[in-house]
Length: 275
Ligand SMILES: Cc1ncc(C[n+]2csc(CCOP(=O)(O)OP(=O)(O)O)c2C)c(N)n1
Ligand code: SF4
Ligand SMILES: [Mg+2]
Image (cartoon, rainbow, N blue to C red; front, side, top):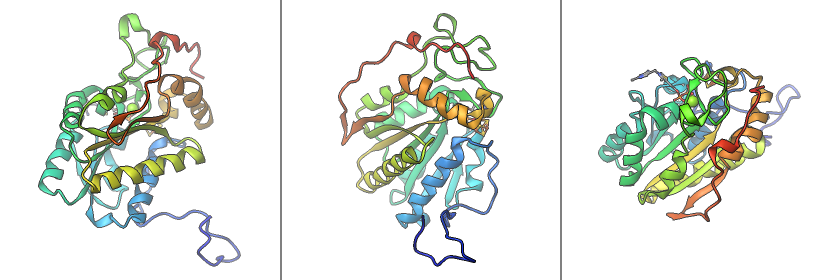
């Protein structure tokens, strides 16, 4: 509830688009997490009063035209190269607040090298990592983060370790790199998780202002179209299938690893049906 405005024609204002989002209608599929993440990021930028000094780097993937929606300065990067581009932007303009926005195909497949090295160098920007376990844009192929048993267009019988390898917990690896200061995993599939994600974004931008080093926020997200589910089914699937392998929570706080949680072996996440 906004609570600060008088009712208009008897109706309360309960949701408003921040000035940091453009008027352009988003192209995302109904129920997709990308739109929610965009809104939260832009809410924080508006509330922190940093619209004029924030620069985002857009990826290749479903969010390739994020710059059409985010009413801030933005730079497009070639597939996987967002952290390399952000490195250049931040070093040339160190007083700007810089973030990358990247899917799992972008960050954890083609962009693995750029991501790891930027984090290891401790580049002082935020990485927002949307892990929906699939290449959404190109037709739902398996991504490095697809969990065991997950049906994708290239693993119609479900991912299995013997031929397709283990799902890649890149966020856990990034947390171990000395350049990272704050590494955390969230989701945006319920009102509560949206609020927690928002707090994480606020913290990460604050740490950047304090020049603490690289911050990474993973969002375990959905892809109703690629997963061939309704939005509600996909949100349930996040909780039942994604969270056991990608548990939400902080991995690194104030430059220190959070207590080690046992990592479940990849093969324990069995999925018979994708619906
Ligand atoms: C150099 C290069 N290789 C491959 C592609 C094809 N491609 C476009 S998007 C994409 C995967 C995107 O997946 P992800 O980053 O997970 O984003 P999502 O669409 O799931 O949000 C691929 C392989 C490309 N555009 N450029
Ligand atoms: S294909 Fe998937 S990730 Fe892309 S917009 Fe649709 S639901 Fe979202
Ligand atoms: Mg993806």
